[in-house]
Image (cartoon, rainbow, N blue to C red; front, side, top):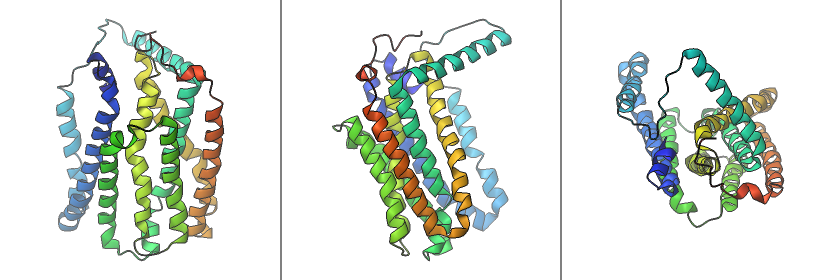
Length: 292
């Protein structure tokens, strides 16, 4: 909806900046809620903390009632007709992604980076406990993660403004890989700060990849293709996470090393496959903003 609105205003080149700001606000709210949630749970109990999480959705619903969709198509159709059209949209979007090698690559890259982040996510607290960080500091650590990711998201457009897209992919890959190596080899109370590399990726990834996907995708398929990217990240995690279950008893550090080696393997595949994408897919078609 953001991209379509900016396109209607002839300002689609501002998408990365606004998407970055949006993600930044989201993660700043995560950080603040990390701190507030801990205080509420400690003083009033977990039940009140859970009930407090309803505040956000209520506010979001009120905001949603004021949002206007640009170029909205008015249709009078039955539920069965709507369902048939929905299935057609899903099918045509799948076919579009399978044909467009560059969009396909971006979805796979997004899936690998996002899915591999979740590998480590479930080890954040065990790792902090392993390195001797006090448990009371865990909430502060997560707040630091979210504040940093939010800042990187807000600055993402400035950071990558004059950098080629291929170099941005390399930067994201390095920031995803290096923290794993440092976490496994440099053990100390503040080793959790190496996770900030992943948080930088978390802040920058979606604005970059979303922009790359949306500018090559037909208007009527944009939301669906972005959903396929999110689905891909969950499928990637679901298919690969059993590996870490099998080696769970071998120790935390070995688990992190395995994440490092496995991620290198996938990123090398992505690097060589990127080189083979035909040049024609890097051109935005004139009618990409029209409904097919």
